Length: 260
Image: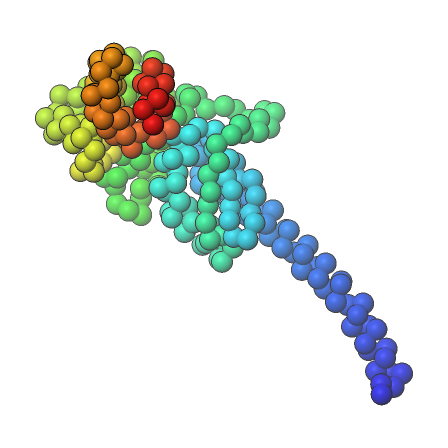
């Protein structure tokens, strides 16, 4: 049987446990808020304008992205982003999920970028940075973005970089490359890519034009002749594999629904 002093210790312990739990919950909320607030610093100013960290639950960080193409690209970069987060917050983030949706308006007085930042423009900066040593690639990528933003002109239809010529001189040069043309053929046939950076970007553009042209040419024939349905379905599957975020032509989509 407990004496008076023992009973007092038990009462004090019962009072301290809820207080300790509340303090632990408060610390967890503060750490979570600090991590979310640090997202923009972790990813850098360019990506910070196009993304927003929303929530952290059970190690899963949810990030809002304004553009579906950028969300797709960032999914492939998530391991790099996870390493950056782990360096600052060890053990706090185990996975990142990118969700497409509108971003909050920037605070009053914050200057917008000089030129619109698009996923293709970010990809072009990354391609330029690939030639630099690994430890310098992040700095080179940011410098490349700064230079690309200062260029004037209409967006290049391939890489979206501002240019007075269309396509831009760099993409125009790659369009004349036999290696890029061969890569475009491989991609259109559903083969894995062999190139990277800007040459791959141009090859994807050529493959897209080729597949869309074949779909549009085949559609009126398949509309009348069911024998061509398997070929139309195969073309549509290859297009979707290359460009999962881009819808098929409306007529092709309608016919595929009938086929399925």
